[in-house]
Length: 136
Image (cartoon, rainbow, N blue to C red):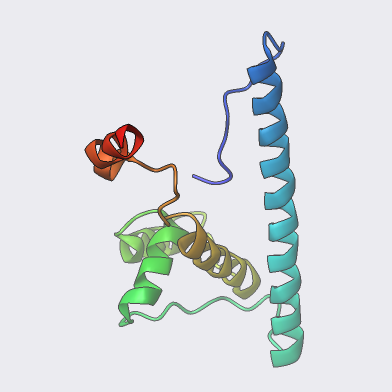
């Protein structure tokens, strides 16, 4: 899902390959910087609100549509409640700590705000209109 991953090439056969590798390196660098900023934000939130870094995160069960969408991204499924229960009740339960959960929810919020937006070069929804634009 993110960061976008280009196909790995061990040897560069063309200028296009070099450009793709550089683009991937740039995306990797920007994603690492963004993750660092999110981690800093979570540490600041924890310090300011005196949150216990080892505390287990409670998940709101009846929630608004926007928060539910974030939970779906965080757990990777629309059945996030089932996934959460299964992971909690397994023989090796996964504990959703406050810090990791905050990082995930903030990251999901950034992803929702940036990635689904339509870009100028996304012509799939109106290929005929895009073709006419070039012909006029």
